[in-house]
Image (tube, rainbow, N blue to C red; front, side, top):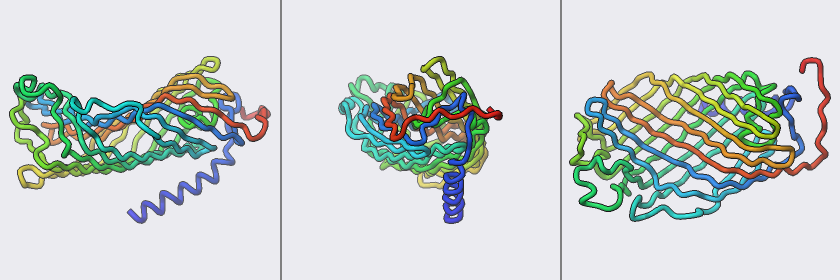
Length: 336
């Protein structure tokens, strides 16, 4: 881990310095090198833990009681940071219970590299499909709640955009540039994730309509790392844009859990997916848009069970670009 940290931050410093020298095609990307972007947003961060039994079609779908939040942020060149300030409303406590949430995410958009880092902890989930418990409607009016269910996770990914001279993730996700013409890019990258899940009793409730055959986990440890390929594309018409991107990863996974006091484990290769999308309006002064990033940790357990941990970030953003110097019209060059 120490060696990985040294390599990671060495690459980060190297490409931070080199990115300033990278030229872009000015017919496709408009740069604002002396501008600061301030933004406000309304957002939510859904989080879900799902178990599926392929033998009985049994499904358990645990979710956090997420609430929309008002937040603010600032972006400058490759760096972007933002934070939620306060909740705009509270979820129905009787229906979904309470989730105590700690969620930090950092995003860096260099010229040809994009880096995402996160650290999360959620305490308290509810079972969205509570009707899978026999006679649940007759027992309770709300949903089955697990205040003792805790997930802790951290991870990140690094993506290299091949067509960085025409395709700008900065324009969409940090708002420090503008995408002037439609363009897309192939990408490849690396990801790693760690998840620890614990509860006071079995995660699988008793008395289910669809049982989980020979499966009764109490604690779960889940890690993966791997490499992937993807594609992102931004469609532009006048000052309106629509972006969509997908990336698939082949990951090496290590899954361990405690079942009835016995350690169970599996090491395998799996396929995981990440998606991004955005749409909105952008000119030299403002950005108004919606964007969403969705990621997951997925594992097929011995071809009989699916373990899926999903985490997302959804935002509606208003951003204002503050130009500290007049916007320079870049000269067209032959290579453009």
